[in-house]
Length: 187
Image 1 (cartoon, rainbow, N blue to C red):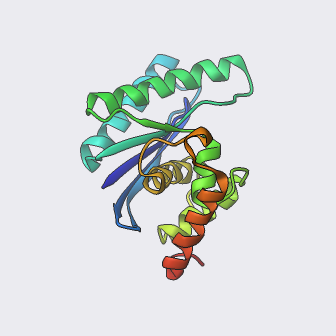
Image 2 (tube, one colour; image 1 turned 90 degrees about the vertical axis):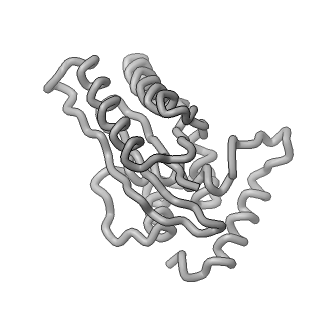
């Protein structure tokens, strides 16, 4: 299965594509769509995000798309702009008949590190280890997008709620088993 993870942003939008074969993850590509805040109008920035994400989908042909849910922003303006960027990313996925599955930041962190309160650095280090990436990307947005794709691969679909029986303990145990089954994948 090929998964495209998207970490939406109105200035920097991360994307990451992985292939999943059983319990093995293979990096296909990752990067960011970086648009300069003051060099063009907001609609033109959204257009550029659309164009670049569309190119990623056309190039990588994912089976599924996953993206991060909005849960917090520093200001109302930030939430509105982020929501527009998310809408553009959703549209690109929908145009490719790949409605994105959404995950909260806590769900992504828990799936990748075993801890829902993990730092960006911890998430990045685990992503780099799991995908055997030697160089550290310039932006967390790229590794966050890969983490979203990994989260979907581990969860195997839309996240389950605690009410449906999915708990942090079960997720942590599943992660521990993954590490035991794949000792060479984690440094």
